[in-house]
Image (cartoon, rainbow, N blue to C red; front, side, top):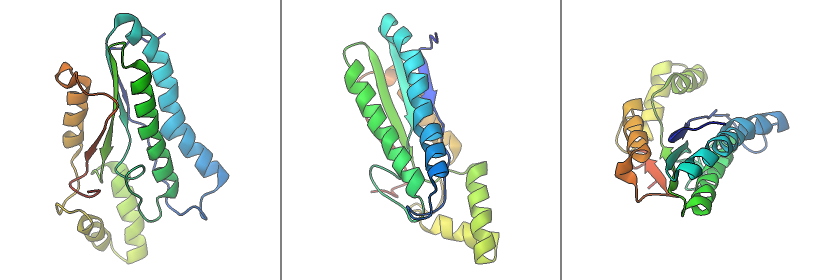
Amino acid sequence: RANPDILFNGAGFVHHGTVLDATDDEFGFAVDLNVHSMFRTIRAALPGMIERGNGSIVNMASALGAKMGAPNRFVYGVTKAAVEGLTKSVAVDVIKTGVRCNCICPGTVESPSWHDRVRALGEQMGSYEAALEAFVARQPMGRVAQPEEIAALAVYLASDESAFTTGQPHYIDGGWSG
């Protein structure tokens, strides 16, 4: 039995394609990784948090999903919308126990997997630079997020400084969804 005070669920995989492109295996893989893994870790950690009367669960959702969609991100959007629903459901069920559950909904974040997606688009467009420019052009702030910016929000949500916050999606997407 796990006994953490803080649980950060950061699982996620981005599939490319529409509902017509998605296979059953891809959809099942994404649901298992992006949603079911969070269900499992919450179920393992929550009893100890409830017993102690304190704890913070922070789930990684996305700006894509519950609030907005994006072309060719069907599977990802569906699973990340589910993470937002999971977050709200857990929060309301444990609200009187001292345990909080929130989620982070980032926009595009610079990461190895993001660079892989830029490279793949670059192959289609003819150059990495053109793909990079296309990704950045859709960002209202003219840049993608840095991992440290998302990490700072995670630390805040895990800390006692956010003690009056539960069941909330926190959008940190440079104005992309809003």
